[in-house]
Length: 102
Image (cartoon, rainbow, N blue to C red; front, side):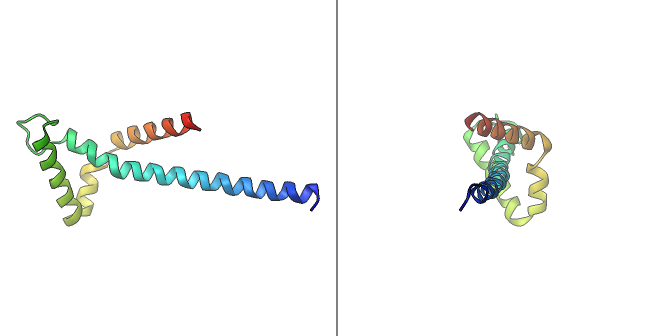
């Protein structure tokens, strides 16, 4: 192998690594949003309106309600949980933590 073949191979591997990094970034964002947006919804929209949202019973009841919605009516679950504000802030926090660590 000469220098130009090695350089061509290294450029090909670099392009592949950049694509894999982008794909892993998208998967991490998707996973974080799928896990954290329902958690945010449990605190911001409790089922029991007369108790504080941080109360364990209220949190557990809201989590069970959301789980039931996810199983029975997935489209309604998505409407309840995924709004632009939590998606934006969860994604922003994920990207900041990834890029400060890189």
